Image (tube, rainbow, N blue to C red; front, side, top):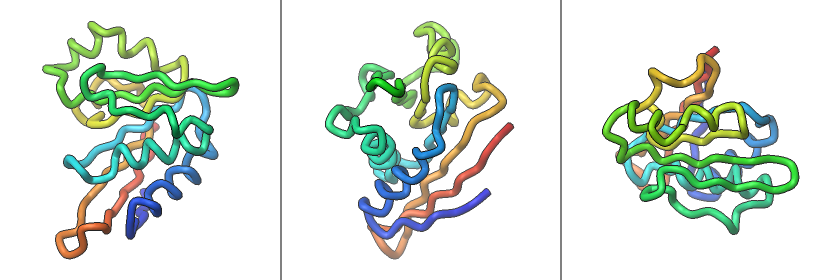
Length: 141
């Protein structure tokens, strides 16, 4: 487990770009944290690393957005509005796991059905500084 302190949105994006350097097909990243804590900004940084930053849109109403270039396919999920894991199964969610890089906002809601290997990043806001975020990175195997 490691921690990163972000002092602003640019820090979050830059950290995500650096984080993205090691990503490969089949990787799953769970982003956990309250609304406005930086999950989508982090995703924007990953997409920027892969040259896809102009494509980003929130998947809030579609559950998943797909982004791809010649090298990689990324699936950006927002499972906040799912009633339960059965709804994730109903959309064929588990079929995405091996076919690209999966970034799952609110992924703690479906953690029980994730493959054993994934990375969870928990975003915590600061009470004293609106721009600060603490990102706790945990790898599960």
